[in-house]
Figure 1 (cartoon, rainbow, N blue to C red):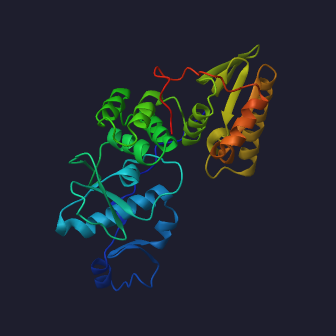
Figure 2 (cartoon, rainbow, N blue to C red):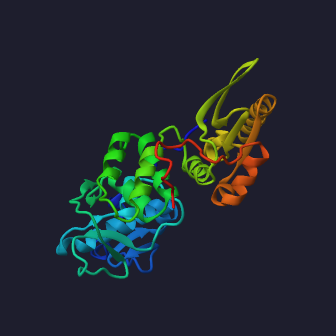
Figure 3 (cartoon, one colour):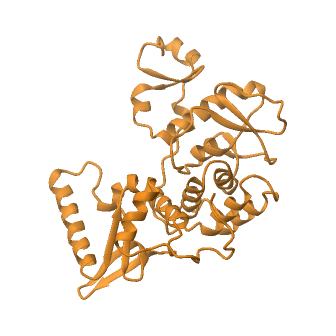
Length: 318
């Protein structure tokens, strides 16, 4: 199966200030420019083609431009994730998150201040952000288990961090600090074989549902040879998350090419079903824990009293 490609980072050179545009006779308030935040604009045509992640990164870069006279921020949580290209589960915020050392340092409508563990940040595309492993740990602690695991899997898959990096960053969180057990859990469960955010979210659901831990990227063969890789595997059962790239339809493909790809996927599914029970689900199912449970239960994947996912059974994701 094809994995999701590494996202293209937002290019801060696309940001333009009004003082740059007006000498060219351009009034950005009228002539097809999107207002990112005070003093920063992006062409409407460009903005329309950006992903939500890239749009949040644009807000980070625009905020950093506005703040340079006051000292540069260190961006954290979703703001650091957007700059690194780490996915999260759920929407991107309308504010940026920065790290400060003292609670009396206030933010604004655009800047939300977090007081936390010290970090000088690392440079990335002209701004300073928490490192990848620290960003993953912060997402796990402060956002959700699902977002933390999704970001962690992505970081491993694309070589942005190692398992040791994640484990060390989680261990650096002091005892009794909010979210430390969840950060340790994410570091232990992270797996670069998870090929997309949808697969990572699905695995997070399987953990919280207390299902048996699946094998990932399972080789499937029948009498005619190799079928492909199943996203998840249990004895006698194959599980597959149906993402957009599942069917390998190239961007811009004509109707005949798309039909051929869908037909090839149907033949693949038929071969799987002749030998295994097959559970398939989409984003809406993975987001709904009860629906996910019903889909897997229908194929015989049931909760167990003590699923062996981690070494410390007392950990949980809540």
